[in-house]
Amino acid sequence: MSEQANPFESLQEQIDDATEYMSVSGDVVERLKHPERVLETNLSVEMDDGDVEVFKAFRSEFNGDRGPYKGGIRYHPGVSRDEVKALSGWMVYKCAVVDIPYGGGKGGIIIDPDEYSESELERITRSFAKELRPFIGVDKDIPAPDVNTGQREMNWIKDTYETLENTTEPGVITGKSPDSGGSAGRVEATGRSTMLTAREAFDYLDRDIEGASVAVQGYGNAGWIAAKLIDELGANVVAVSDSSGAIHNEAGFDPVDVKSHKNETGSVAGYHGADEEFSNDDLLTLDVDLLVPAALENAIDGDLAKEVQADVIVEAANGPLTPDADDVLRDADTYVFPDILANAGGVTVSYFEWVQNRQRFHWTEEKVNEELERIITDAFDNLVETYEETDAPNMRTAAYVVAIQRVVDAYQESGNWP
Ligand code: GLU
Image (cartoon, rainbow, N blue to C red; front, side, top):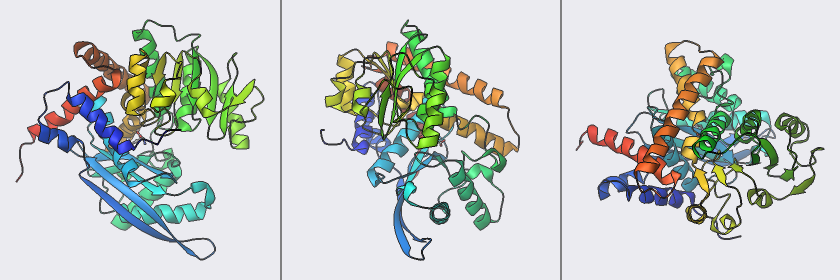
């Protein structure tokens, strides 16, 4: 395996690629490539056995020209300062490409949450929330779930913030459970925008999604919901994977049944309906109509990209393809529909949650899904229009052209501050 790409350098390369097709001055391009500030902190937390453990944690606020910083918090051993910076930058351009009024941020703790009890995780989360308190706020910086975090952690952060501030302000964080102010449809939202992007992509390319073969890498919240909703369009999910490995069946799986197996056993491996089991790399190079990478960054690098056989890739994960992989796939005429559009459903429904929290009003799931579909399909149309009007070499660069222009316009309209 080749050396892992640094995600922050990948982000900067993606911005450079796009600004070649725009007229943006050098100083503004520099501004677009660096975070405004990064919090790095060390959390000292008492474990169940009375010992104290220290956890490194980050929050990057990348750009606030279009609104409050917005983005998730991940718990993963691979979290690093550069990873969080990259992810916060991707949030800026994600929010801009779907035109919701946010900047971008991202946070993370270097931790394998599987190794800690629930009460330890609660203390770790509340300790991070305490450190975040001066930075976050309903109009300042609004965290949300990401890899290995969900409603439970968001509820704890909301409660810590509200307790310390002596207020009720559910919109300080999104992705909460419904009883704590969460929105209907939020859990499914990332997978739903992946499905909508795949549907629109196949339509744009004049291909039938019905009967199309699909491989999904990663069976967490984004991957499994994408598999389920794409299956409901009539496509055939022939391979799925998680960190334990991949399963394959040419006749297709029932994604819901695979999910029940994963819930029971902890992994997709060993599923009774699988014809064969192989590695994640085997899945990523399978000859399918649609490939959905839904795990972590750098799943496909330049070397692996040479072996990719899928015709269309829709990215549910953040940053699953390195810039080298993009080059190889462009030369191979593989269409890649980028993360900043395809997984933007999560932050879009976070936006709806924030709006509902501020209005102290509740939307039905039907309304949430309807509004999400409108935002994603409008953004898709805008993207392909830009792709066709500019000489952008691929959909990713076209998406960045749309997004960067919006950020630059907001920045320039605000004028100069000494
Ligand atoms: N973590 C998700 C993302 O990467 C959601 C962020 C949010 O809802 O603010 O887009």
